[in-house]
Image (cartoon, rainbow, N blue to C red; front, side):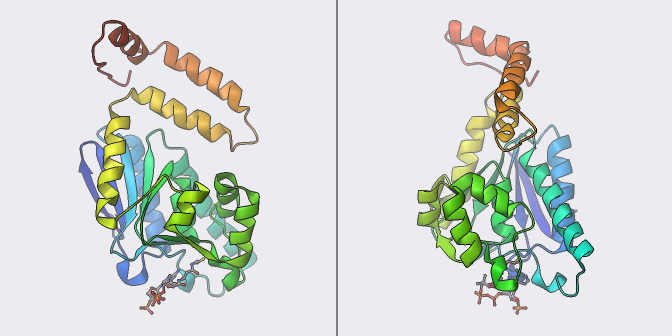
Length: 258
Ligand code: COA
């Protein structure tokens, strides 16, 4: 169905594996199109409650945008490339269902940007993060200058952006770029354990958490107002009635997403 992605749906979790291991899963335009289309599937398929994005093979999550496609681009082509990438990554960030990056190796350039557009990140012990675009006379174009600064702070972000240096998984953990560092063979299971917990909660409330948290990074929105609105919307759901009743009746809530 997707020429550059492998997908498998199990326990309402869609695992999306970028599958170009011979090119370290670099993001060419076909991968970007497939990512765009798979996000439509995540948005529209009610069977899917959450998703994991990872890379094929033991070495790389995604080693960046495909540099071979950069040759000979004009200003307008460069801007269009960045805009298209940003739009696809906004689609990930703004999904109403949790999307987790399992970073199983290199997350460089567009790979680091892809991981940062996910709602949170887990890394394997061999993971390496970086924005090496300056080595190519470029800067990140898929949201990296913004999300890296938001996630790890301006000083650390600018050091990485301007030096092109990579950081290892332990440093990424210390910086708060990833939530956990695990042996590679435990990475997917840990993400699934967390998502199984999230998937057992009220879906409308889970979506509202994402909407409200994303408002922090949106200058056109007042995040506290967004929180008030989302709280109000949750307040009238069947799931809120069920959750509060179940607590008072000392039983487990059964959420229906309504
Ligand atoms: N775009 C296109 N191809 C890429 C790529 C990218 N971003 N990253 C890796 N590849 C390809 C290599 O060209 C090579 O292809 P080949 O076997 O046909 O020659 C293959 O993937 C394996 O990569 P290689 O460089 O041989 O592996 P390595 O272990 O020696 O080095 C990296 C790994 C990640 C350090 C190195 O591949 C690299 O620096 N990649 C580019 C990272 C980057 O600048 N990303 C930002 C892009 S904006």
